[in-house]
Image 1: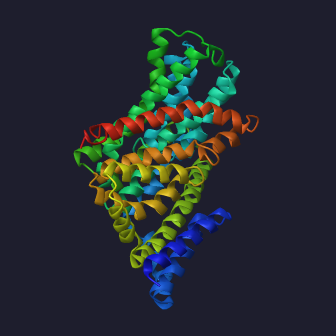
Image 2: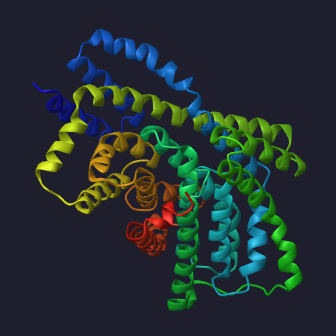
Image 3: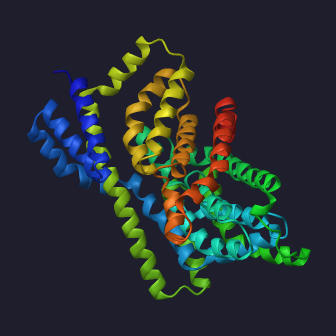
Length: 428
């Protein structure tokens, strides 16, 4: 039996295990071990289990992950998100739908020091959701805005998803972060336009807030300063080459820690921040270990090369190949966590993208935007369930109803970046 046939059997078995609710990391590791042992031998497969996890956890390239998570956790524990939302509300709150604009803008700015979409959604929803409901906003619009706004955390650098894509495909992490700036800001602008259209068509969904003076607006901007400062430090340092992305993660975490201390973060909050970071990092590293073991199996099965040959025999155009890959991402995103999906699919489909002649940095941005769609689409939109955990009184159907216009917005952004690649590559 050929390696490719064994590969297909193992992959379908893995998808079956995932469907039966086995942890994705364990399913990838088990599939990789059994598949490698089946094709090569089980003694070498055992040596991979022995050395693989250590090599992964000691890999210096992965060290930014806990630092980027720590940045967001420090900001959340020090209640910087509260001041951020209040500052944004002074700018937009007097408009109809202005508080929703403030919420999505806060999510975008918070994303600048948080590499996690779920952390962004959780932090900002605790602050903004009660205020929006208190001011007469429909639950669907309030929850949908925050669920969608949280997805900006996966695109606006620093982003764990962009970091992992770069490491999987051996691209420059710095280039991926720089390429994510314009698409991330474009997403924020389109979300604001979406809110404006929704409240114009359905004015009963939102109410105008209290008016603020020009002086109050200027004072409110101070809540945005820490975030923009840390973001400028990280991206500016990477762009100028002053420090590497790994060093940028440490500098950003240290800067956020100092800001949190100045805002009165207690030792208890510091301890909680470290514990939460360790928990989230362990989850991600467990998936990375599973993906590494799965990667050894993919290499010996040569299934990626067989897939390239099969697609080549069908004489598809490059954009037809891209459409098929993105469709696969959207379908898997409906039932799978975004990080797990990237770790699972990118090693398989990346050779197809290379063979089609697409720029790998550009495709990385396209892939991550598509993953974003999975965070807010049924039946398993992770950000939707984050909002549900914060506000258990809001029905799931209302949250999905609220995010629908933002799904359309993301599809528009995806189309723009496919049509105009310079939106992703212009800063490089």
